[in-house]
Length: 178
Image (cartoon, rainbow, N blue to C red):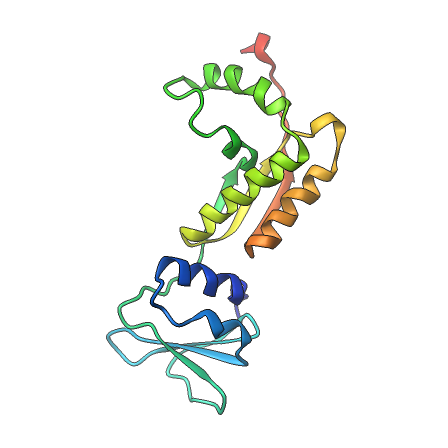
């Protein structure tokens, strides 16, 4: 069986996107049955794992959620992100890549671990709201050599309920090299 996204995060996200949806209690259920579509079809989820898809026999205690009119799809995967850049969103617009980097590198160099956590939290929330369940962050800012920045980004992902692949990024060309 495939690993499903955290049901509590999924339910909260779905409720935020479709406020009339009655799915907030899904995380507390032993098994959730998502029903809907043109044909009678179910997705059975138990303990955060997709257990069955298609024609699924009901079990005592199942919580059936009517998803008729909704789209149930696999989560999106964002394979290349720099979450700290959310902190400077809207700055240096209309630039080519080099001018953008020259403008923003000094700003990014002054970010604290707490500011990077806040940027990662907001960036991951936006990804989750758009259906992303896994994100890869290529992080190369280590404020004042404080490696706890990686823990802060991982904590932001835990808070949102999204899977994170966190890697240490690097660059091999400086400004003088173009």
